[in-house]
Length: 120
Length: 240
Image 1 (cartoon, rainbow over the protein chains, first blue to last red):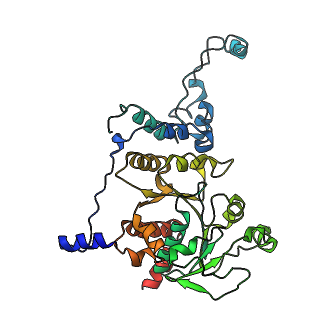
Image 2 (image 1 turned 45 degrees about the vertical axis):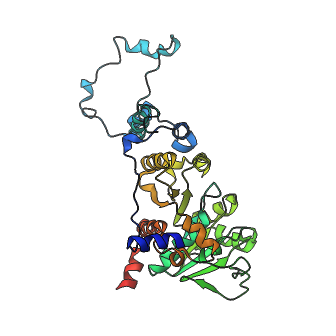
Image 3 (image 1 turned 120 degrees about the vertical axis):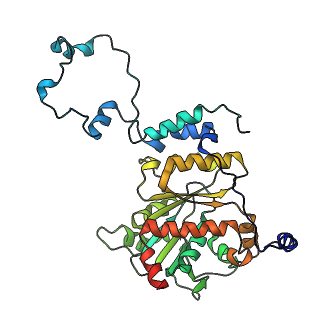
């Protein structure tokens, strides 16, 4: 122990220091760009899972094992769906959160909603 | 028994210090520990209080007397990755690991020595990757294991070293890494200048600054590593 620290402890009549922790609550953390860069790096997080892959990996949804007769057809003319790929593409749906990584994206969202400089 | 590989993709994060302290704390918990210094810098022994001029025996050449400090046998393993016999030992298909003995090996590998890291990793029970709360350390996280996303690395546990709660980026990095890695963030060690001062005095930290805040964190780290590696039985056996 350093001499000045030992002297201070002697003067205080103590044997040890108490350490104060300056911990942030979760909501106080900021989204620094370096965190965002890591979260969007495939080498770090892996490739985002497609909707289909997420469905295949996930548990069957309620009713999925029900009688096939209850399944709605894809559209009024299922045959025309075969050629849908040749039509003008529909706008892509928003990517669904990967169930395994959804909490991380929530985390990112929560952090990004924090006004910058709030805790400076 | 097992080998724990200490390697970070970024130098200067305190890997040798962590390796030395993990070895000391595991020895205190009853394990028979050998600290293997694979680094060119030969810096591991510094954190045991051994002078730079004092040679520790080489694991293959076996020259010099055994160096045991704080209950840990310290050995140099410099240039071992270039030893063909050693490479064969580790890469021979179906061969048992040379680290399967009743000892616990703690390997300290330099940041830049990816060759040794790759050689040892298949034989490691745990890859302990020290980080510090600085951009240079965080930015290299995607580089730990090319081809495998960092959050999916099965053998890797992370340790946040030099944590300083009085600094904003340090606090936020801690929150971020905790959320990112969850139980793969196996511990944190708070920054304490006594660590450097002890090394400069060639004294083990526990003797130089027994009340160091870093020591309390290192004790927790050793417990967490034991649990993670399933080694607690031996410590409990020694206690009883």
